[in-house]
Image (cartoon, rainbow, N blue to C red; front, side):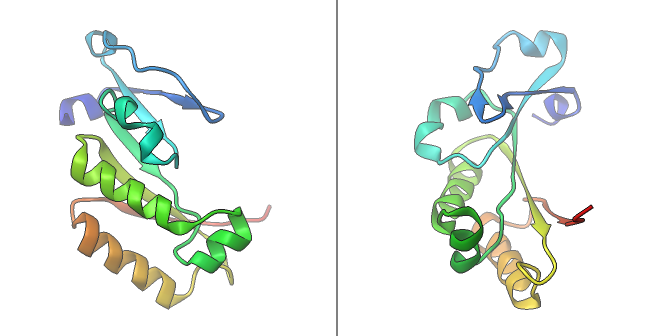
Length: 133
């Protein structure tokens, strides 16, 4: 899989619409990358054709998730665990830190601890800074 990840990346999800991975893509050195937060129940077959996924949780508390996204955190965590433990999809996590909203030391420590304990140290965890401009 590492050779595939060094290939050119062809997004497989555009504006929330999924496009099936092309099984002939590797002959052209293309890798399929899923950038999504979809629940895994709808994507099991899709994951079989994915090389990589970057998941961007919006926060790490149920309150923030509900207030900011109108959704729940647990399905995101379940999907992450499924991708890492039950598929061969290379998974990375990127968290957008919004000052005063989801950037407390406690929240960041909880997320890092959860990734370490539930997904393992081999899963990259990235942090990006929110800029309102």
